[in-house]
Every structure is written in C-alpha cells, then in structure tokens.
Length: 397
Image 1 (cartoon, rainbow, N blue to C red):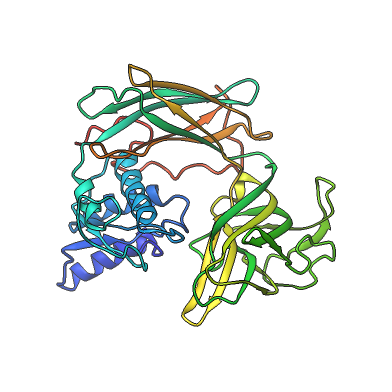
Image 2: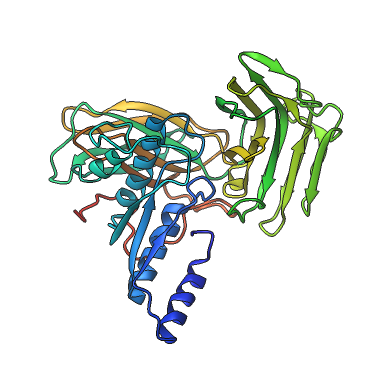
C-alpha cells in the first residue's frame, strides 16, 4: 500500500532478503484519491523496487464515488493511463482488482461497462502527448503541443482537455461542488474538513471556509450555522491547528480560517442533518484555498450507515482552469487559459480519454513566467526519479 514510505518499504525488501526470504514481487496499491503526487511516488517506488531485485506491479482499479460500472471503469482506465503515459514505466505485473461494490459484472469483455473490458483495453495501441506551457504577461497560461500515436503519426481532430492548476499565490473564492446519490441505509449526513488527518497527507494548509450548502432532490437542507455567522457554534473541532472564526474576506458574512504547518493536524465536523437514501444530492463548499494547501487534506461529505462511513471528498487545492480543445489536422493544439488570481506558477496537464482503439494519454509540465524563480512555499512536483519523464513523449512502447 502507498500509505507506506518508499524508504521503509525498501528497508523491508532488503531485510527480507538478508534473512533468506527475498521477495519475488511488490504490488503497489495506490491511494488515488488521497495522494496528490501519487504518480511521482509510484514511479519512485517502481525504480527502487526494481533496483533491489523484485518485480514491480501496479494494482489498477476505479475511484471511490463512481455511481455506475461505466464510470468506475472510466476512472480505472484514467488511473492506469496517468501512471504509464506520464512516467513511461510499464509495470512488470499488472493487476486488475476492485475494492469497491462496483463493477457488478465481469463479462462480456467487449462491453465497456464490464470488468473484463479493462483487461481488453490494456492491449490498445498507445498514444502520447508533447506539451510546452508558460505563464504570459497577463497571468494567463499558454499551452501547446501535439497528440501522437507511438508510431509518430498524429491523432487528428481529436477531443482533448487542458487543465492548469495554480501552485502559488493567495487563491480565490470558489464554490467547490460534489454531486451524487445518498447511499442506501443513510438517514443523516455531515460535512467537515480534514487537515493532515484521516488521509495520506502532510502539507501546510491555508484556507478560509465561508459557507457550506447541501440539497437533495433540488431542495435545500439546513446545515446548522452553515454560513458561520455564529462562529464555530454547532461545529466540532479538534487537533493541533485551531479553526478561528472571522469575517469573510469577500465581505459576504462569517467564515472560519485555519493556518497550519505540515506537522499540525485538524478536523472539523458539522452537526448531522437529515437525508433520504436514494436522493440525488449536491454539496457546495464556498471557500478560499491557497494553492500551497495542496496535499494537506480535503473537504468531506459523510453518510454514516450500519455498514460504515460513506465518505466523499474534495481535495484542498487552488482553483483549476480547464478547457476542451480539438487537435488540428496535424495533431497539434494550442490553448490559452485564464489567470487564477495572483498565481505565477501552474501545473499544466493535458489529457485524452482514449477510444476503442487507442489508450488514454496524459502530459504534464510546470509552467512559470519565463525567467522567474520558483517562489518560496510554492507546491511543486516531487523531485525527478529514474525512469520518469514528465511532459515528454513516451517512447517505451
């Protein structure tokens, strides 16, 4: 499991070998939702494992919160493609597995909503991106490149997405949203925040939460003191990083703020509110999150039931700018994304969803103002590791 430290896992591998029990393989189980830098961490684990002798394998499965078999399988394909196309690493072993209630059916394998289709799609033809990006004088982000088959031929007139996530600056006020269906057996719900607790998290946090709203079936449900006009009344807080009541920085009313280091932890829960199992819901967290908070925790929506805590999360991060685009007849693309507040450093990711013939593909680079140094305290990707090629063509296939 990637909850473990890479150095500790390496120490375990070496210790077993020293005692006469060398490991044949290590299969990595990634916390897709809890680790912002899971791609880089898994790549580091792959390099370290292979250097010590065992085969390295990845366990591929979908993400929590998927409502249908098709949605679960789509996220599973995204996970496997993000790891292999961003890093250029092909695992020695590939394991398709589910820890969730989905998918419900294994066959037929040619049906995209069946589990065996994930195995079939793994054999699809590979693709890759080229990508360059830079922050412009007005703060916007210019990104360009090409989507290519691994033979070098272009994928023409193909739909792609480009996302720029800020890594520095103060952040902007934004409504973070989740939609879904209240799980079976749930009669109450609660909302909250987790900072460096109940997650694989260890980062600084700087955020202001101004309001939380919940509705089901399109009808608002009252969250007691959901706009914090009475400070922290009706909210339960704990940890080493205190939540402080304040006036909202945008003048909208009350708010709570937390400023913590990577060694602090904190939790916050609302009082419970009534929900109806099977009802469609929407939850909104109106907040200002500094981009440097990335990797420190999440906003949470929780439904306690007899069979456990059903939890949906929104990772703390700066507000992304995203756009859809279509490659040209030569497979190229060029897009401009609007600035996010005062940010001057972004992680830019370009993605292709794949189809019945071609794999999904991703490319990623860090974009900054040309010639500008990285600001102190900014969130950046993990240090490069052997075998990882972020934002460059994948020629491993």
